[in-house]
Amino acid sequence: MPTSVTYTAVLDVKRSTAEHLACLLRDHRIVVRTRKGRRALGCFKQAVPVPRWFIDGTRLAQLARDNGLSTSTAYRYLHEGLAVLAARAPDLSTALELAKAAGLTHLNLDGTVIRTDRVAAPGPNGADLWWSGKHKHHGGNVQVIATPDGWPIWVSPVRPGREHDTTCARHHGLIDALNRIAAELDMPTLVDLGYENAGDGFRHPHKKPAGGELTEAQQTTTRSSAASAASASAPTPCSRPPSRPYGGSASTSAASRRSPPQPSSCSSSSTTAPSERSPSAMIHYWQRLTVVASTATGL
Image (cartoon, rainbow, N blue to C red; front, side):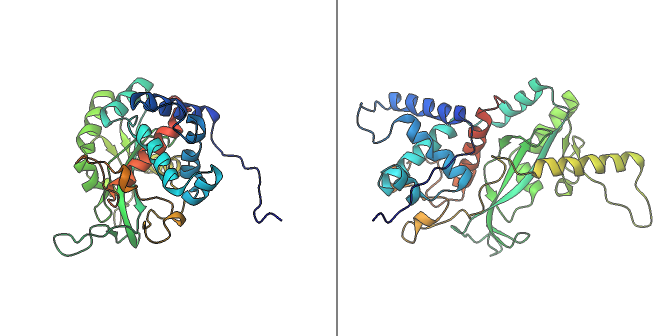
């Protein structure tokens, strides 16, 4: 008598997205000269587990079982899919050029802390750099530029979760770049009060002065910022990762975690690449998901 149950599942992603990733994997195999018959899965079957992991947070053990793979091979195939997507992630200048070409009326900028239980590092004053006092957990701060309807077009590298949004934005060059595009194209950036006094190119809500009232212009700006924040924070296929925290250990139930550590046999020796336990890896997963979801829209 069988001890398992087989069932049909539907992945909430366009087929064209998986097909696009399959094409990228095919091109990658050509570049690395993968010989015919040396892979356990074809390009399309290798592509499907990647959005499954992104959208549903499917465990690696489950992905391996569903495809008849060993866990180590599932790790390798997943990270290969992530790598070809990472190469397609737009840089800041490209994203702003796309926004300019699209004729957007404004941009949205917001920061989010992606949870991690993987690392901790003391700062100059002894406080943990990756501990977010606001969210009460470890994480990395990621800045996201989005269109007026909340669709992300650029994601920053990760910064320690302890850092303020304005500090992170200034570190990534966002303050100067967004002020410049606002002056040149009259394309302001709507933000929350975390970016107060960032420059004339930023529009943020105004605080009601003690014993006074906001002007009509200030009230309009405040309402616009609130509406923009609501759309930018709405969950989309690429705006929020699944609820499982980014973490895990290769030695302790790695398969039950959402984000797998990169296998040592596949780790990069480049000094610019994140190590398998570095929180810098979080941004790459976020960027790759943005590319996956944007592929179907042609943005």
